Image 1 (cartoon, one colour):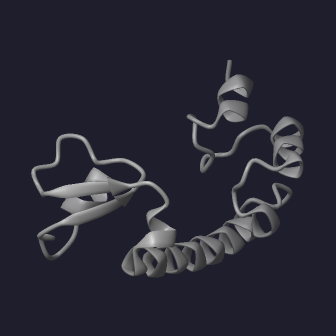
Image 2 (cartoon, helix red, strand yellow):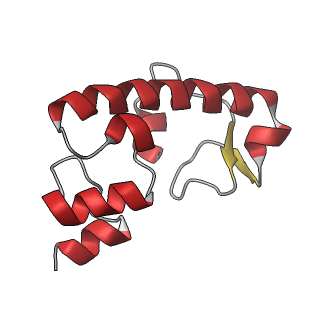
Image 3 (cartoon, one colour):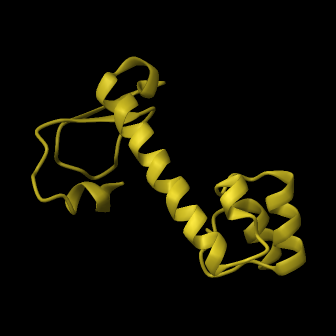
Length: 105
């Protein structure tokens, strides 16, 4: 998240983050639990992010067939975990995702 904020074309005056704050960031910020339900701009950003993510996951489903990305959108569903066991992790899997980490041991 820090990298995303620092990569913006404009420097924000204040940042609201859902649930926690971003470490080592000099911009004033506040972490608000359930911010996507309490702060309209965070709710709107959440919708935009999910739409963008869903589109990207559909693209990745074509690139990496068999994982079901277009269906589970990257969530750790049973089908996603089964595909991981069957196919092994691919280059886009987060190594911090516990099922991926376990398979890489």
